[in-house]
Amino acid sequence: MSSSSLIGGKVCEEFTPGYYGICTIGGMLSAGTTHLAITPLDVLKVNMQVHPIKYSSISTCFTTLLREQGPSAFWRGWAGKFFGYGVQGACRFGLYEYFKKVYSNLLVDQNKSVVFFASSASAEVIANVALCPFEAIKVRVQAQPHFAKGLTDGFPRIYASEGIHGLYRGLIPLLGRNLPFSIVMFSTFEHTVNFLYRNIIQKRKEECSRAQQLGVTCFAGYAAGSIGSIISNPADNIVASLNNKKASSLKLAVKKIGFLNLFTRSLPIRIMLVGPVVTLQWLFYDTIKIFSGLPTSGHVTKDIEEDKMAESHSR
Image (cartoon, rainbow, N blue to C red; front, side, top):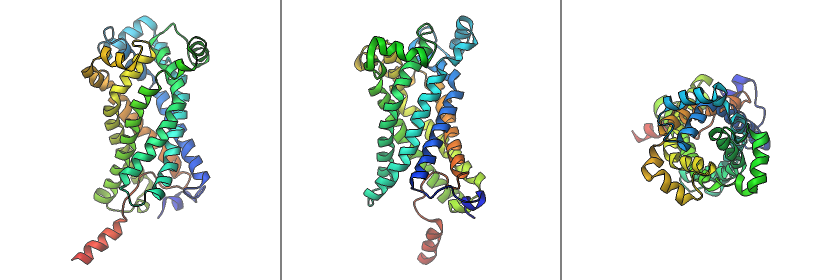
């Protein structure tokens, strides 16, 4: 029984404008809400990156911020998180689905990993251009308590003093963080889904219950988020440094942070953040797709029944 019959019919067919619209809305809601929920942890991460001497550990950062700025400090930058990452999620997921179809048609004879890489990279470039101004304001609001309260006063203040350059100062390192993350995240997710259906569950996706399908989504999402966070941690430290004017250029930021610290600074809390957040994003995203009568995400390379028939013929 297919997921569409379980729900009661599709809202639209796959690979139509309506389908990409649902994917875009699903990406926006899943990314925006999950990033909003982990704002307190993000505040800790940013402050540990920008003020590593003062905040040498998660517990020190938490107690010091609570004592000096009160509980409200942990929700600084919430609007930048919700709206910025909502826009990014809309582009990241919606455009990934679109580009995956385009590249699948163009690169017919290529390995599927090439399609995943090209699709995620194309979507992520656009997503980061949309995200960058929100990220610039968010990071500065979180690490500089007297700079601004949020988006409404932070945006005009940066634009008045620094112009467009101030809003896009961190675009290159942001791409350096999110491009590898997105490529690794989507590819890991796709391959994990394929592996689970082919080797563990050994059933076609359409034959599985909604709970089984979403279980696969969660497992693949956690693997994708955890691996992606490790790959992208150096650039995440550079983004925080540049947006808070701890360094004036990419080269100086790397020199000031230190090569080893690029990989290790704030990594534990980032894994704590990114793994569960990406898992929830995929869960919310695929739940929206299921309730629209659409299949869950992830490409399975070959029908399992065909594999079984091939095995029986070989005997």
